Image (cartoon, rainbow, N blue to C red; front, side):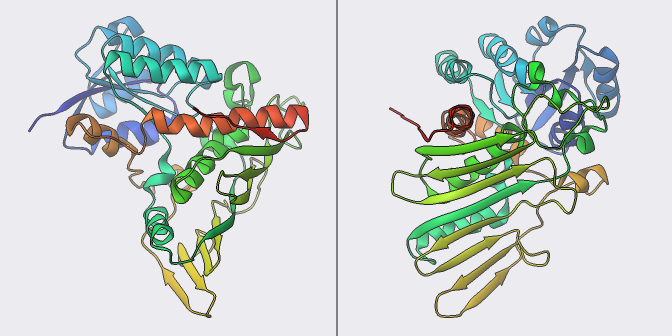
Length: 350
């Protein structure tokens, strides 16, 4: 069996709890190494998952790796991805894809020119309930979609990283806050569920409570509220938050002319469809993966790594291709612009 040789750049939590374990459990790939500016972190993952700790980024590019996960801080996504693509590597880049529209466009163009695959780690398209909901919507189970409400809210990345002064809070490194960390997932999900891209956004991105150990408010948004519109006239609300100090909320409601689909809104049933005629169907195809699950060892396969490996080895299109994921980034940039201007922003696409 052909095996894909893989490596990881950036050895923080996302690498240690998702990328490395999922590569390790995939029989179609082989981990050959890790790179991090903190060599000790790279060595720790190499000792646990196999492969070597590369002494430099250049050494990784010169290695036999076929494909690389980019798990670095936001500000470095584009730079690392472009170097890897030009160095002949397929790339799986963590979200957000990059920090400027120009970087995102260059990443897609470079992948095309280099004839290498570039996928973005937006995992909500692989949830079993979301996949089933997409099938229901296409089939017309709730009639014509009219509106939606989607939310992603938890206590913040300091719970995930274990650091009260995490780089996620530093505008110079993260550039964005909760909207890029959480909102990009939900925008991409709405694109997937509805089968069309958001065309206009009205947003308010705020920093209302999250503070550094010094007591100062963090320099990026900790909450975002957006009104999203599609070309067909569907309108919906997106709420993201790092200040939900209760149970994590990762729910989505899709309202149609013939009923409602409720996703991850009930602890016992991850998909509920309520029809206009009073019929209620409850499904439980999976359990929504939460940050708490991973931190307590209840790991589930997100599907992202398996998809990356399969898309390369089977030479097929992927729902995570950057040419699709970039649409969610355009909404993110439009949200920032809308929040700054206080105006509705149209997203124009060729």
